[in-house]
Image (cartoon, rainbow, N blue to C red; front, side, top):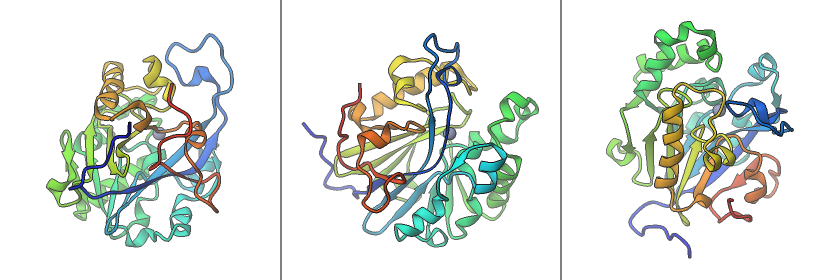
Amino acid sequence: MSNPASPNLPIYALYAIRYAARDAVRSEHFIGGDPHDGPMPMDYFIWLAKSDDHIVVIDTGFTAEMAIKRKRQFIQCPIKTLAALGIQADAVDDVILTHLHYDHSGHFDRFPKAQFHLQEQELHYATGRYMRYPQLQHAFEIDDVCGIVRLNYAQKVTFYDGDGDLSAGNLSAGLRLHRTGGHSAGLQFVSVHTKRGWVVLASDASHYYEHMETYRPFTIAFHVGEMMESFDRLKKVAPSLDHIIPGHDPKVMEKYPAVAGHEGLVYGLTKRPFRRVI
Ligand SMILES: [Zn+2]
């Protein structure tokens, strides 16, 4: 059984764009560690949703300079990959930021025409009292956060407080935002209407498939209870587990086809996965 698309909603093609990676072990990814500590590398993605008349970029990744600073393997600048797909960043109208961690919010200055869509609570968190603690500020870059503040001063940010059907903001009836929190205080995930129904970009509501499968929380956490509820919400919103795309899992590359000519970089999420989830 498929989950067919709704006839009255716009249909988006949806892609994961992989731009960086790092080696890691399992104990880095689960609060409480892992008894079978072994390799568990991490990939870094942005996402592209494209309909006949609308292009949306979801998250913006980090820069080559940030990769050096944070000792990440930079595979290819996601702005360059967008261009290779025929998408010029300076022509994009809408950018959704799932949250403001460094690996999701760099490159904001490369989208001069765009309106950015963000949960208001995330900016409160990133500029608020908890940022005095190095442990909580570590995943933020102050220049990125200040950059978003500047964009707001330039009327370039649309804020949401809770779940948003973006058609209310004249964006699209085929996109939905879901405020969830947990990993970061104002984290949101995104539903995109595709030809196989609603596909849910979890972003960091579930870094890997394993987090939502086993209900073990990721190590960077603002509110562990909300993180657990995020796993529930992903499953409630998505038509099936096969419709949920985790934020950092290399398995995405095993489950979805690479776009020809962009192997290792671009994966189409519109078709059902090769291998079932779980
Ligand atoms: Zn992340």
